[in-house]
Image 1 (cartoon, rainbow over the protein chains, first blue to last red):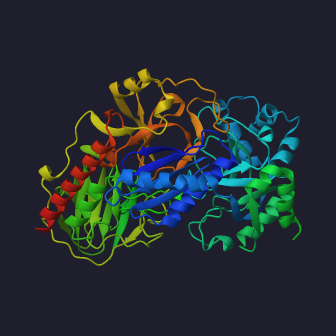
Image 2 (tube, rainbow over the protein chains, first blue to last red; image 1 turned 180 degrees about the vertical axis):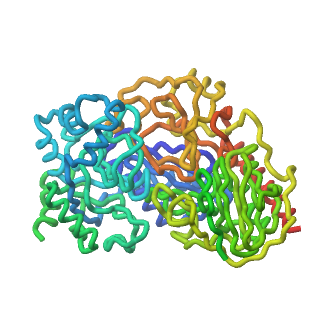
Amino acid sequence: MSIRFNFGGDEHIFGEVSEAMSLDSFFIGLSMTNAVKAANIKGVTEICPANASFQIRFNPDLIKPQDLLKELQSMEDAASKSDSVLKTRIIELPVYFQDPWTHETCMRFRERHQDPNSTDLEYSARINGFATIDEFIAAYSGQPWFVSMVGFVAGLPFLYQMVERQKQIQAPKYLRPRTDTPKLTIGHGGCFAAIYSVRGAGGYQMYGVTPAPIYDPTRKVRYLTDEMCLFKPGDIVKFKSVGRDEYDTLLEAIDANTWQPTVHAADFSLTEFNKDMSGTNAKLMELINGR
Amino acid sequence: MAVKVISPGLSTSVQDLGRPGYYHLGIPEGGGMDRFATRIANLLVGNDPGAALLEATFMGPELEFTEAATVAVTGGELPPKVNGEERPTWESFPVKAGDRLSFGYLKGGARAYIAISGGIDVPVVLGSRTTYVLGALGGFEGRVLKAGDELPIGAGSGKAGKSLPANLRRPQISPAELRMLPGLYWHRITEAAGKRFFEDTWKVAPEADRIGYRFRGGAPLEFVEREQPFGAGSDPSNIVDACYPYGSIQVPSGTEPIVLHRDAVSGGGYMMVGVVISADMDLIAQLQPHTPAKFAPVTLDQALAARADNAKLMARAEEYLAG
């Protein structure tokens, strides 16, 4: 695999590890951005890992674009051979699937959807071969997800489910983006889940909401006082399906600022994961369940 | 010292030269969309070029001063008035306690920069006073101004009567020429489509804001056929979600190009045909809806030369104002 480098105007270098999504590509991109960070290159202003690519922003008054490109290319070999072991954490996030708010929004924008006669959940369950919405939700919340990118808007995670490719849930984006998405919506586009950190436009299918804030510019939420954004690339997330009553209880605790998500440190090895996905996932999930 | 907002205008926010370093979290750099006008407005009132000021879009606010100050308005031609009497743009003028600053109709450009001596003293968040409205971060309570807001103003004293002559500013031409470096996913469109992209005259769509500018009126892009890569989505314009550079030109469904600006969304799943060069970002800030515009391809060397020309223009202006 060789990274496709490209200048994005006179201030960015874009590196595409692969056109298709895979955890292997994500890890190479993450190794590259970690190496750039560690190299502390003069003139580099932003280092952004993405799903299967990455982007470096620089000030061309401080470093010649071609010099930076050469430096990045010299890091490629080491990055693609790194052993892909990550000291990370697993976070359990409660999600109220089939909630009234995303449902209302979903109905408001039916004419922008591929199938105006189904809800987003009905449509996604059907095209992915699930007999019922419950089975779809069970698959969605049954196995963990990898945060493979943070962005679009502040603190929004893109999540890639840690299952074999044939088990990956896929769904198209809306034909035309909506002008509204409830805050903290769990959405899905392509093979990615996303959590909308703020209310706003969006094109992903909508499945549910989490009561837990994931971005707090005021830093008042007890688990967001140091970092405004909960997620960073490399985090592992497990959705926990909750009903209305539990959602309301959680919301009260969150409003009182007494709640925080279950988080556990975790070691992740891509090699081991690729050898035994369900075994690796079971061990990861034990960390949060066996508390 | 404070400034009371009597009426907010259409979309007026506190901006400075931005908040770099947080794009990997989806928090954009922000800052005045027209950086030249931002810097000059501040220099005219004796501020640091990166002090916080107001960016007004299409329509000016009405402001009341609690104390005397020096004010300058740059950028788009939005004529300032003090107690109803017109004042020049690109020139500092005094206001007294109780004076009201309002604006006439926009005569050119799209955004005006209103600097007040001392600068707007909202709290610094992540290194900047810039407002990031989507993320409710920074600026005045993380949002555009509302009637009744009171903006704190720092200590400062500018001199009235300082001005920047027109020959030291960059002229606006029509149709606007936006130079861009083709690349990123340029290979996804056919050669004929690439040629048409530069031949067509586009028009700024009404959806044009700090996040991005949408353009209409050119021919839809034809894509090179391929089997979509895993995870990208089924539309030929879809890619596996990637980072979006500032100035990047994405073309959802191949129809309407969107140029991302200072409050860019940091990534997403649409292919980009290239990136508008840094030297032409300010020009976009001053485009009104329906303005004609053309995209022009340049090489990286030409982009760097244009950047150097811009820096020279800025240096000449600064030298003039310091003299």
